[in-house]
Figure 1 (tube, rainbow, N blue to C red):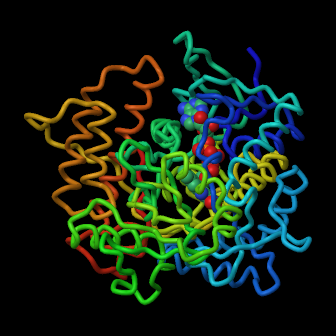
Figure 2: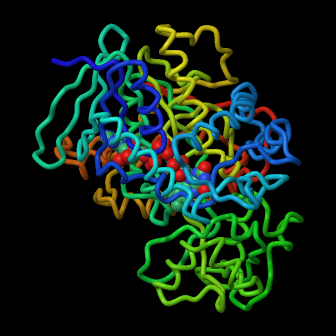
Length: 513
Ligand SMILES: Cc1cc2nc3c(=O)[nH]c(=O)nc-3n(C[C@H](O)[C@H](O)[C@H](O)COP(=O)(O)OP(=O)(O)OC[C@H]3O[C@@H](n4cnc5c(N)ncnc54)[C@H](O)[C@@H]3O)c2cc1C
């Protein structure tokens, strides 16, 4: 049996970028459960943050990132993120990513909670698509083998070190085992846990579940970012209306057409995502509606159609001309800040197992992610995985300081007499109601009980949907248990029964098997 130097699970920006670097160092296999371009990356709109502007500096980017992270960012990791950003952006340019330019220089825009314009974008609001297409072309040109429609279902561990991965062929249902020296999880997020979400179908928490079962530490799961403005039209799956729309001057209005954000926060429409998402929910409750409106009709149609061509076209295709009518929006689950715990070299607590991208938790986002830092995190920390593995070091974990952490096992939960039948729809409804934007102890306990019951009752998975349902149930359970333990409100985690931040809880919650 072939033993690869690197097996990379996932083909979003994290998987493809890492594969392009890894092929310089040895044999590489990419495994992905859909087609190569099925991922969240393709849907990223706003862009990628980096302090490359004249009025900007890594120090300013560092300050903004820490402010968003609300006391839980790993400062050493953030320092690396902001300092190494310009070099990684130059590499993306070399790979051929066509960032938009203005007067011969890369164009930069402002997004909420950034103190200066620092977001690079491509094709206006089609940044992710340009990145994904550019990288996937490069991977094909480099003849890196990519196994499509192949779902990783189990990490194989021998003598406390990763030895390979079990993979399901999603067409035939057969399984195969592949051996490797380094296994890199680049499996993305878990937005599909929630009824309303902006994520692609692939975002089912597979990497979290695989790593947890292999014994890796999972951290910060209570922090899930809800995007305040997803298109809310009947019969249309929520579609992200980028933060950059408010950055360019978009105004949130309630059903009566009144601006309302300044009633909730002095930062108004440009407040951090969690503040805007909660304010919208309160405003919806106050006005008895299921949506508010994002108004750009005061901007010139030229600005709207050139800066947001993708959003403009998507809305127009659904009968809405945003140059003339406000956009109906509501919050939706968007980004998982927690994940498989890594150090600043992408190493997890299991030897030979690495994680990068949304499935990883490097510590840069803390309790809340600064917009457009996620694709930056991918390129910065994927490069570091390559740097450390090139040195041949099996592990450097001991040289990396631990974060302030409390360690937990999933608690035993008493069996419930009755609970709803398990299905993707009932799971998504449960998560939206009980572990969504606004949480409380009763709802979280109810969700944890039901999810624990489902974990016991679900039959052994045999195909992609059943594996995904099982992975989502475990990921949801980790979120619910962590959210129950965090009896305070911080960053993206809000408890109506503990609405204040508590200084004693400025530490991370870690789960292991
Ligand atoms: C609508 C939207 C807009 C966004 N806008 C921005 C933005 O402007 N700027 C920004 O920085 N971030 C943005 N984000 C977040 C950002 O896009 C993601 O965090 C980032 O692209 C994640 O990259 P990734 O490679 O880790 O995951 P993904 O791109 O989601 O890729 C995950 C890959 O893993 C594969 N996979 C998963 N499980 C398995 C398995 N078991 N076996 C095999 N393969 C598997 C998937 O098929 C997929 O190929 C946005 C996200 C969304 C959804």
